[in-house]
Image (cartoon, rainbow over all chains, first blue to last red; front, side):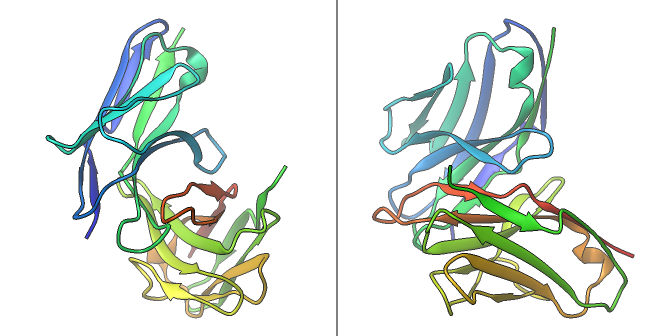
Length: 113
Length: 114
């Protein structure tokens, strides 16, 4: 079945630092990959969607791409702000069950002013 | 704006008791989902539904039942709650666009089983 591996459990940065979070995925079909963000006390919300390998998804200063060759996808931001502190999930769109999402474990980002 | 709401937001239950978590969506989406969130596991799918009257098993359905009486409402039922079911539960709705689409999540229900 589909799976997502998200190794970075916690990332701590200072404002204006560069952010990079990496995930790997496994699927037998053509993937669509998402990044969801969850703020304290809220449910996850969509941040970015990437439907084609090597094409970028861009939103709110964040960029995401995926590489079919290495089955990896990543999220980056050039300059983080304290307000970016949240949990970020890499998510694989359902390839076997229509509409199903497979979540990684999440990366907690803490940004200090 | 379209919304997914959950009730209750917090629940304390006793082992062996029955718990019902409710979800309502105004998105007019066909599909609805129940997940649980635990540290180190991200979100894991318990049950989902394609529409009124439909319920399907997700990845971790054991100990849970689901009910979809209408387009708007989707419930998760724990007939005999156990401490291992202590978690945060999220409901979501979505509508397929040739298989790939986003989901809209509610604010979550924190369940503690003593």
